[in-house]
Length: 434
Ligand code: CNA
Image (cartoon, rainbow, N blue to C red; front, side):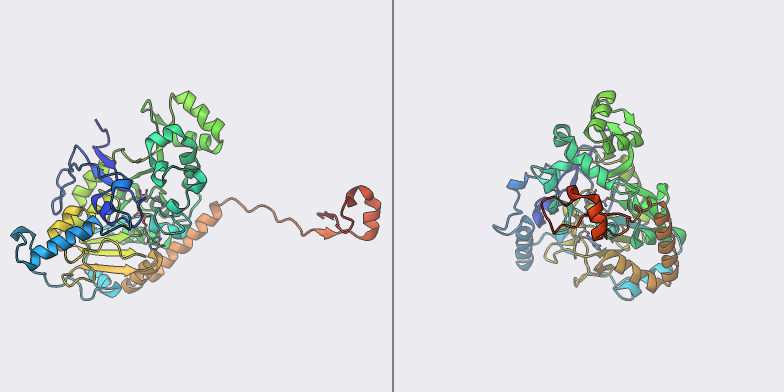
């Protein structure tokens, strides 16, 4: 029995089909479907998708998604597409314009807590935390130092049991406290201050939403975080500060903790094959039907079931992607109903059928700043950024004292020090610090 609600971290169908990065990972539901996420495919069991080698993520031919699109397009053109797959007529546009100004007018028209944020690693790269998939800078491109058999291994329980030092090294780097929340995190706090934030669902494990001041009850850490820790063998809770001290102390530290606890201790971060927190499903089921605006920020939308949330909001909910890459867009050859069942790739920005989706493409902080400016909230946001920056600077450990520049010794000083210091290289000038 999976205590966390029976939903496990795996690759997704759409990820497998799209996979530009074969290391992309995803979550898939297993035995217990979410209670009533109504508008899209329920979070029901799926066969585990094939291993990396078996997926069609290679460059050898068209992806499964492309093949599906071609087949469906051929059926459409032949007039043989089943009725239930034919797209309904496009409703009239909800927004006055599909940009920051149109969004701002829409937001300013509302008054209740009706905005849901879905965040990912791209919200935190400006803070200095690498994401997974950005080519060159992402973690998946930079895990060589951990000598992993494959990138996902760092989040696999079997590998953690065998070589915990790899994950512990990463945990040490990512442990909250060392990073300042970004403009984007502070905008989420601003949404709360303005009484508009219904919930912030985050895939991130860095707790920067909390550092920005978003209340804990409004934040859902879908993939866990470092706030709690558990012994993987006994299931006992362990004080995360104790784990941090053990990790900081290196192998001797975590080995001693392992011996004390009767097994390795891991922060409650969801590994592949582990269940997502039940709270994620409960609150997604509760909040998404009430959501008027879904802000999808800094995510590749390739992790399930998280990415599926995009398809679980009402038909009249505006969805806005703020991201560097144009992700999650529906291939117009794929009917809306099918796109929803695939779990992601259902956004319609740029498509002829679009009536509610916006993409603010570029750096998250830039997109968020332009939205804040259109809302007339730029000064509020600036104030939050300034105070977070000041708070972070005050908390950061003081830099080491600066050493004075080395001074070259005079000939007489040299002579008095003696031959010993002038060793083989007769031209070398010994230096001293004043
Ligand atoms: P991802 O798959 O790495 O995708 C990140 C997305 O953000 C990509 O589409 C990037 O193009 C985009 N991006 C990166 N930087 C920026 C930026 N400055 N401005 C705009 N867009 C940007 O990450 P996801 O969150 O989609 O995948 C979910 C994984 C990542 C979860 O399991 C997380 O636990 C995991 N993760 C979290 C963190 C963190 O906590 N900060 C860091 C790395 C990975």
